[in-house]
Length: 156
Length: 280
Image (cartoon, rainbow over all chains, first blue to last red; front, side):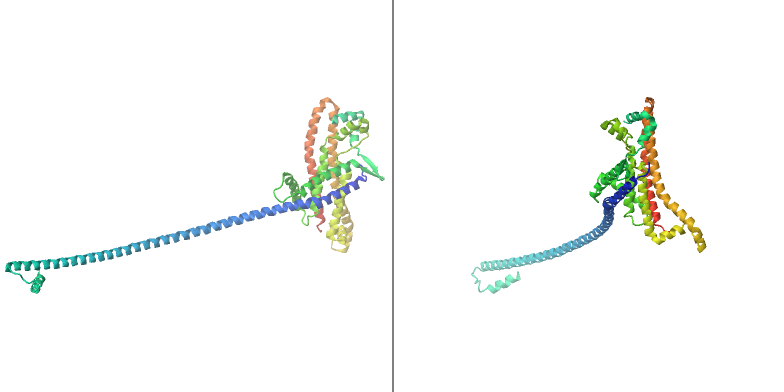
């Protein structure tokens, strides 16, 4: 256990080991640790940001949904209104058309009646002339008495 | 193996066995005496553990670490945390220094857990009893006062270096005479200069001495207890089983000592160097 030159040998060895650790062992390991710490910190920060942006996005989407709902309600209301309007218009058009058709039909009927009446008048006039000629037992010039017949026919 | 060698040494009894085991393998190189067992084991263990750390450091990735890297990083972060707690300043030198101390002292202490007669047994088997009888080998470099004081002296030099660096050459010398007792008058200053200087010298010297002696004492005592237990194993057949149990118990307890002494050496170094950074 006496002290000898081993002391200096071990001092040298200690010095070499310190130098080696300082130069080659410590820096890369510490760098790796620090870099990983930074990566983890970044990851955590990113996760926080993602959570925040998710909250943001969900709030925004809720808002948009609400707006869309409102808009669709408006569209439906407008459509309903337009449909009612269309029905109303159709109703009016239909009733106008019906009225027109009715008027036209009535005019037609009136005209037919007039024609029939005219034909009937003429026939009655002819019958009257025929009757009168039978009664008079002579030929009556139809032309000569056309005005009489016409007058009679007009009186029917 | 231990009982075998112990029996071999029984010619001179337990005393000779222990004396044989406390003998360093001293070789003379260029007129200087070297304990080559301490030097070889010390440098090999240091190179092995730091080489392992280096191989991990070279492949270190900031991504998902391998288990080995995670383990190494655990050690790094442990040391870094300890240094950060007691030293406030540039840690680029202190932290690797602390890691070196912790790892190196740890592995050198751990050599205490090798079977006491492992080397002796190998030598006996390879070259016979006669060679083994003249072959000395102590496997625990920290149980050699040269190793512990080598480290303590390097740390002492660092303490002085940092003291001078922080306080300046004049400031360092002045502080040797003006602290810890402060006086206001010139007479008082002169009167207190001698006690101050004396206290400072004691304070400075106490640091390396306590560092070196504590580690040496713990490991030397631990080694000695292992030797005594080995002697007990060889003493009688009856004592063999209890001695084995004792040996196991002491080894398990020694695991604590190994780590604790490495830790204490590291922490005290950091504390001393951080004290050197303070001005009184």
